[in-house]
Image (cartoon, rainbow, N blue to C red):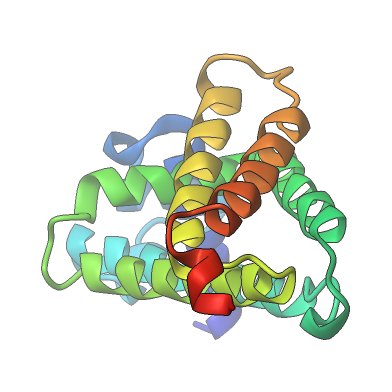
Length: 198
C-alpha cells in the first residue's frame, strides 16, 4: 500500500466530513468514497480516533500549502484596499471551491475542540493564521494589530458560516471593508493615543 492510497483515503474522509458531517466518518464509508478496496483505510488508521487525527493533520497540510501559495502581496507594500481584496478572495475560495473542506474544518472543531490531544493541532493551525493576519494588519498600518486580529478572525468565521449555512449569495466586501476602516479609525482615535505619539 502506498502513501498515495493514504492520501486518497484522507481526501475522501475530508470530503465526507464536509458534506455529511462527523457521523458519516467510518472506515467503510471512506473506502467507498475513495474507491479503495474494503479495509484499505483501516490499514492506515486502525481506530476512528486515529482516522480523525489523520484528518486533522491532512487538513492542516492542505491549508498550509494554500497559505504558502497565497502570499498575495509583500507586507512592505500592502495597502488597506489590497488587504480587503485579499480577504474577500480568501472568503470566496473558502465558501466556494473549498466549501466542503471549510465545513470539514468546522466539523472537526466542534467534535475535537475540547479534546486535549486532537484539538491541539487545530489550535496550532489557528494560531498560525492569526499570526499571519496580525502581520498583514501591521503592514497596512493598523495601530493595534493584535486586538484587530481577534476582531477580523471572528468576523471572518461569522461571515463564512453565514454564507455556508444561511445566505449563499452574501457579499462580504461591504462588511469587511467597514470593519477594517472602523478598526483603523477607532484605534487611531482611542484615548491616550495622541499623547503617546506626541
